[in-house]
Length: 353
Ligand SMILES: [Zn+2]
Image (cartoon, rainbow, N blue to C red; front, top):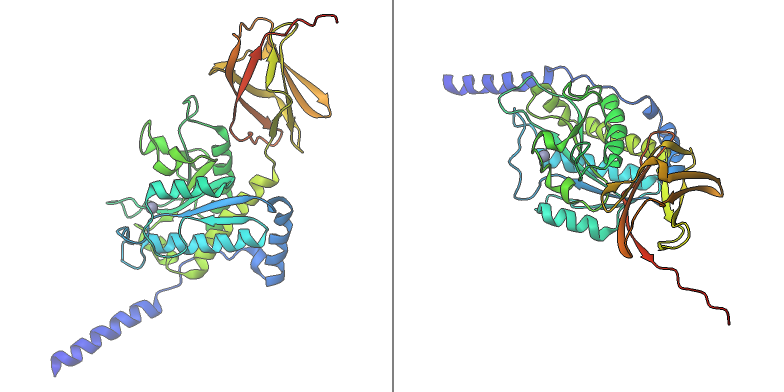
C-alpha cells in the first residue's frame, strides 16, 4: 500500500512540474493583435507575391524520425511539417502557388524531393529544418543556408539574397539571433560539407535555401517548439522574409537576339528590367566561363533597360557559346541564374539583284 501511495505522489510531482513550469518566453507579432490586421499584412504582400510558385520541403519524416528533442518532447520531422504547413497557408493566402515535398508524415528521399521540385516548375525552393548540436545543450541560434561560397562556380548570389531576407525576419520573429560564425546569420552549406554542401541545395534546379529555425537540443528551445503558437510564429517569420525579398524585386533578363553576326561590330543585345533600377556597377557577364571586361559592356537607358556587349577584341569563333549573366538591382538583389547559348554566324554577302 505504501508503495502505491508513493507512486501516486510521484505522479503528482511530475504533473505539478509540467503544470507549474512557466510558459517559455516568445513574442506574438504585433500584426496578430487582431485577425483583420493579420489579414491586411498578408493582403499587402499579395501585391508582390501573387503569381509566384514556391516549393516547400519539410525535412525528414516517415521512416526518418530519429531527430528527437533533448527532453523527447518533439520530433524534428513533425515540427518541420507543422511550420511548413503554416507557411503554406500564409503563402497561399497571398496568392502564391505552393508545392510541397510532403504534407503528412511520409518518407521522401532527398532525390525525390529535388525531382518533385524540378517537376513542379517552382521559382524558389525552401527546405525547413530544426538544428541540433549533440553534446552542447547551450547552443541555439536561427540560421538560413545557401549553396557554396563566393568564388566557387556553384555559388549564385541570388540564393544568399533569399537567405538574407528570410534570416532577418525569422530571427526577429523568434527573437533568436543568428550565429556569430556569420555576420548576418546566413550560412554556406560548405561550412558543414566542404565543396559539397547539402544535397537539396546542391541539386535544386531553382534558387534554393534551407532554414534551420532553432535548436531542439536546447531544452528551453525545445519547449517552445512544442507550442503550436510558436510554430506559427516561425512560419510567419519565414513568410515575411520571402515577401520582403520579392517586394525588393528580382532583375529580369531577356535576350533581344541570341544570334550574332561576326561582321561589322558584333554585339549581344539584352534587355534588363527591374522596378528599382539596375545597379550599373554590378553587371557580371561571362562567356564560356570567362569574365567579360567592363570595357566591353555598355548600358543603355531607354525602353526599360538594355546592356550592349561590344566584342571588338573578342575573338569568338563561329558556332555556339555560353553566356552567363548576373545583374543586381538598386536594392541589392541579384537576378536569377541566366545561362544561355548564343550563336555566332558570319554575315552572308548581300548581292545586288
Ligand atoms: Zn533536419
